[in-house]
Amino acid sequence: MSHTVSPVGTRAVIVDLPDLATVMAWHASLVASPLPGQVEAIAAARTVLVCFDAHSSAIAGLNSLRDFHPQSSAEANPREVTIDVVYDGEDLADVAELMSISTEELITRHTQQQWLAAFGGFAPGFTYCVPAAGDQSYTWDVPRRSSPRTAVPAGAVGLAGQFSAVYPRTSPGGWQLLGHTTQPMWDTNAEQPALLQPGDTVRYRQVRESISAESGSGQETTAGAGVGASQSKKPIVPARPSLEVLDAGLQTLFQDTGRAGHGDIGVNGSGAVDRASAWAANDVVGNASSATVLENIGGIELQALVDTAVCVTGARANVSIGRRTFELGSPVQVKAGQTLKVEPLGGAGNGLRNYVAVRGGLVTDEVLGSNSTDILSGLGPQPVATDDVLKAGRRTARASVGSATTNPFDGTNVLRCVAGPRNDWFGEAELQRFTELEWIVTGQSNRVGLRLALAEGNEAPEPLQRDRDGELASEGMVSGSIQVPPNGLPVVFLADHPVTGGYPVIATVIDKDLDKAGQLGPGDTVRFELIDFTQPASAETASQEDTPKTQAKTQ
Image (tube, rainbow, N blue to C red; front, side):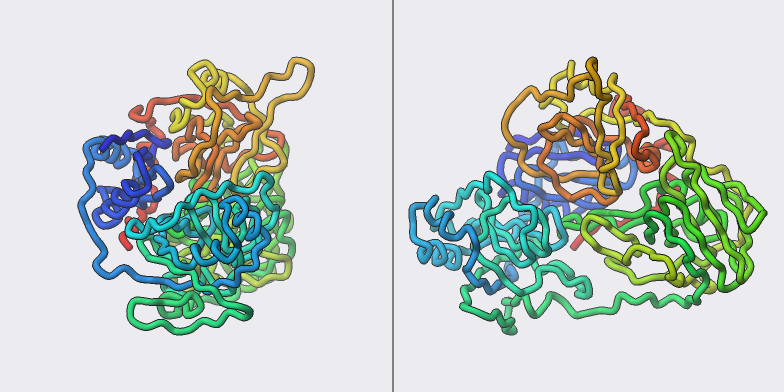
């Protein structure tokens, strides 16, 4: 069984495998018996992405996976999930015509086929299903639409290639739509939020008008019944109203260390984009590094409701209470009734995001163990708005308020990266040109990623050119993946990136430099510097002891 293993940045590797059956065998084995330091394993059509907690773990993992043989395992009683469908999709007749059958026969085949939940997709609860190995009665090879829809409604049931899936929320998409279901594919309040888990068998059941969720028996579960018992996501730590938001600026979000380990169900890690700044602010006020902070763009004004201590870090800014000013990274005592102002300097090279830590940590509702707001999936608390009242934990600080620290932001704009894993789509000369060009951050950038452009004019350089045609099968992505779409202008994925992507990744920013990437704003320039995967970047090594550890997801 042939396979290749390639580095993805400094904390992940990707395994290329011959077919989906092999992918699922590898994935099942890695989930059942994680490698040392493994955070998660994300399956896709032809690959398994394995993420680790440190550079050293990734190096060891790459060496182990070169000689890896998955353990044979079989699910004795696979769970069967039934999804009720009204077959009224816009593309039903077109797909039937493509397959040279009637619409009635298409519906019959789709409902008689036993499907297998293979791997998670681009959104929470989106699961790619394939014909089960024991049921190859029909052949499925349905091309995507030539013109994708800008909005596919939640609950739409579609086909693409050999896959069938249900859209859990409204989103763009190019799948052929057969019908719809009102049964939820994602329930944040369930013990297992995603209805479908890898390894489940799936049956689609035709219904006429309204869709009712009937409780199954034995191993069968209907989508409407939910998966697992409902549980409260309300915080259980003691908290009190501490700050009122007088001005929320352009964007203010709750962020912490994120929710790593849920890629299988379409959920990325999220969390603070500039982690070093968030951790430094928490440390100064005596919080754990994982405490929730505010991530702000455009400045913020906060009025204290009780005496408290705060620390502001990140982008260059003026921090003040009345006429008193404070250095970034210093502890600030704010008495009840006083107003703290954070006014960013703005402009190229001064950073984009500020972080405000409050002693005790901010308290809000959790989703999958994190308070982070993910702007791509919509998971987590709503963005902070003017007039909101923020609660902070009581008696939850880990230490006394400390002394001032050096603000981590240094304004550098060179990002170190490891080539690949798909640099072979471009060739050596184009990879070299990628590092020589000066790229410009565009205004379309956000927490999902930095969209880059080149200078315009008569002597403007050409965008990157691929060496090969065709499409890349969707595969797992990480923060720092530098995708190159057909227009040749790179996109650098940040904390809220999609779990999978289908454009080739020319290089991957190393973990340590992701904080720098998160501070780049519209108009900033950036260059890339290639390093070897095994190169012991001193900053990368030094940061590992300070990185909050994430346990491997084993179920």
